[in-house]
Image (cartoon, rainbow, N blue to C red):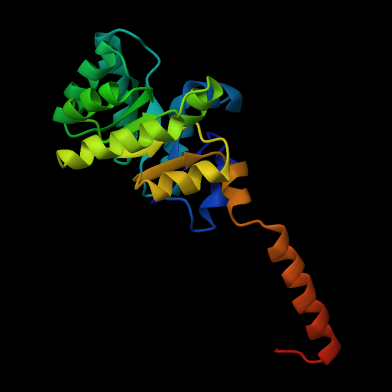
Length: 217
């Protein structure tokens, strides 16, 4: 399963790319706004950091303007994946961009029916929001399972990109269900390799090693 970093903070992204765990980056209007930077400059800088897909989202809601914005974003770099919302206009834009060879990430997916339409519109990625469903008492991971089943039934090439991830368990569950990608904020990526027993075991090893008086170097 690929791991994308959900951030528009270029310094933060650069730090995590060095770990070797990051396969791509996702941004959205909220993250861009939080960064306080120009979207075009920010996406261009992120695209230079990674060869993986970098999702850049349109801000319009009508098809014609979405398409114009999508084309402008796609022109920034070859690895831009234009992100569009799962609306009728968004899916029309997805079809037009996909037919022109642009990768499209269809976002704000909350039902398997929506995911089916996104795949038929040529989406490279579908982004179901598991955390937001869980917040409402629904089964976010159940949605991932249903989408994966539908896509596998018909050998659809759209990749399931699990979004709105709130915990490391979401990441593990996504992997168990066979999701293609998970996009996670930096704090979740950092939490994946942490466990108190790991720290406790390492402390014990270091104490025992210090007692030997040896040095490897």
